[in-house]
Image 1 (cartoon, helix red, strand yellow):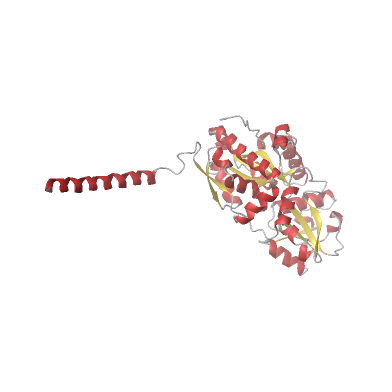
Image 2 (cartoon, rainbow, N blue to C red; image 1 turned 90 degrees about the vertical axis):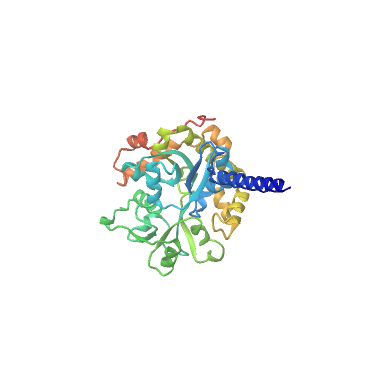
Length: 346
């Protein structure tokens, strides 16, 4: 009996040891072992509504379907550029604000379009400013010099014959770190126009604010910008060169998300709001904005209805014309746009 009890104690101890070792092995195994392309970081915590494809690809499992264990991170413009340059961030969404960075040597290429228009300029209700021509001598609030609202405003006024160059003193850009500060400055007459990312531009010209402010310019409908991608997808050239299958698979995940949003805009807004990807107070307004961004459907992707390379060339030309790019547009496009083979790795 004594030997039996000893055997039981030894067996129990060995079983416990094996269990602990087994659990430790499981715990130390990479979380992304089941994913073909492993774990990657994607900037997707800024809360912007135009990041909807990232939220939906993450939430609906499109990244996972294509072999990625995605970690959504916060990253400012400089962090994104560094990550793209060294390949630690394979892909980001961004606008033509990145074009000068490409010219300056950041190792990244446009690989696709994301969506159309997401910027509005607003003025006080009843403002005498009605057109771009009325902006001569006026003050425009922007989030940063060289940022997209600033670049868009520059293109808009230059087309109206007004110099956007600070040295010419024909229009003044005033920087505020937050869109709400731009609104406050407009309210206090410290500026004449606020150039805003959505949803602020729409929030402050509808509902309870409809009697206070009105839209001067809408990127999604203005003839200079309408029907063209304003936001693009940028991929790290390092990843393109070393692992093109990864870029192809990642782009397929984005396409699935774009197509899902195109078919389910209201449900997309519900998911984005309910899961706190973005702080949305008015879901109906957010849904209208998402629809206005014209996310490509499966049919649009199949038919290639929007020419990404042509849009890159168009905005490169506009930025070149106002001195924000030094490279001739046709040469810029050759280095800045890369067409991905979506069949790779299928």
